[in-house]
Image (cartoon, rainbow, N blue to C red):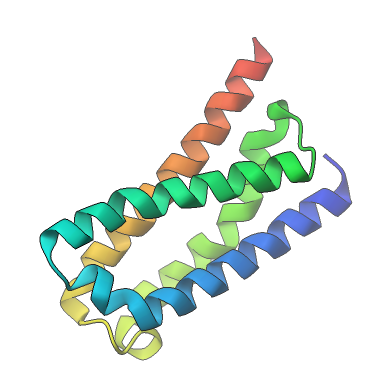
Length: 129
């Protein structure tokens, strides 16, 4: 993977995190504090849509499957670090979300990162065989 691709992936990861954080800062209460059905539908849809976006980015940048795990980490690291800060200061960065919803928001994040990184790792291992 070229240095250019690495920089693009990291920058895209930062942009995706910023856009996602802004979305949840405003729409979070409707997702996290609504009905249980709404929450669980969103819980499954959000990681899947994010995974589709990541696969699209990796294919668009022509990242070979043997590099998908590294590429996905480059996309994920800015968000993982950023979300650690957001979750530790939820009322400051996302004042519309109740403190008690922080766990639900964190669960969204864990599910999303696990699915994205899991797919990337699977593709990398598959390419190695």
